[in-house]
Amino acid sequence: MTDETAALQASRKPRIALMGEFSAGKSTLSNLLLGARPLPEKVTATRLAPVWMSYGDTAPYRVTVEGATEPVALERLESIPVQETRVIRLFMECDILELCDLIDFPGISDPNMSSNVWERMLPEVDAVIWCTHATQAWRQSEAAVWDMMPDAVRDFSVLLITRYDKLTTDKDRRRVFQRVRRETDGQFAATFPISLLQALQAGDDYEKWDASGAGPFVTHLIDMIEKLTKVAARTDQPLYNIANGTKIPEPVRATIMPRRVQRVRQDAEPDDDTSDGAVRASS
Ligand SMILES: Nc1nc2c(ncn2[C@@H]2O[C@H](COP(=O)(O)OP(=O)(O)O)[C@@H](O)[C@H]2O)c(=O)[nH]1
Ligand SMILES: [Mg+2]
Image (cartoon, rainbow, N blue to C red; front, side):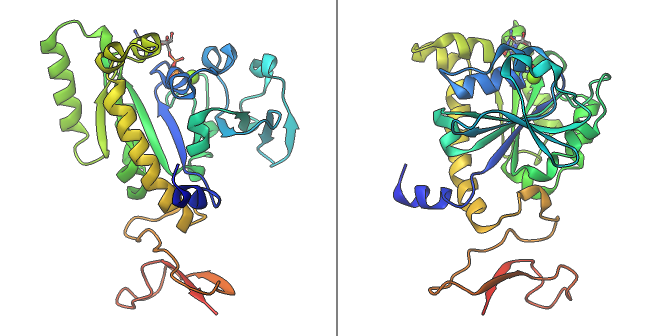
């Protein structure tokens, strides 16, 4: 990590959400990214409220919909009431969490869970890694949710076509990739086919790692985190809250610390040059 990156991260780490349909591989992806310290089995096996992972050794807790916090037991995560829990907070000392926070979302169209369980967490996110099953990639329900995402989030987000190992012929693999690319054109920063299982099993075998599709994805992810780190340093607002047509705030270029930083009104006249919503210093 460069000094510059370290200084930027003192302000706020980018928050990356893992989203997609139930069983698309979100929790498997968390495990892959967390590396040697995988999530407790319950996180991958159970329907849970969103799980927000950060660096550290703070004890796990949940935040209720009313905003109260309550300690939780890792071995009893399944007993946490989903509807009444805004988010479960887990802290781990994993390399990836030194760079960003990860939020594992529940499946978007799970019939057993109201969509407000995850919708109410969206304002907290900067970018998304969207997992879509190769064998039923980019369903109507996925497109519908993605349609509602603000541009600022979409511009940084990545689409992962998971379970690529389930496609057995080259022809199938090409066909699925091309169709998904066509149907999501311009809506993601990048699209990668991947077998999360093969990536997990690759261990130190670089050939297997690359063959799984994890190589190019992780390279892109590191670059994405670096860009997001700079953006996050400029604004306390997660990118989800930046309205379409509004510029992402420019850095505040003050040599002396401003006494206060104001958010410019968004309803200002369009030809008024303060109407881009940028955070500006005023003294
Ligand atoms: N074959 C194969 N199985 C996968 C892949 N990714 C995930 N799985 C399996 O799919 C199941 C659901 O994955 P999970 O990560 O729990 O999905 P989530 O509901 O999106 O969190 C698990 O049994 C995984 O092992 C993949 O790329 N290939
Ligand atoms: Mg899961």
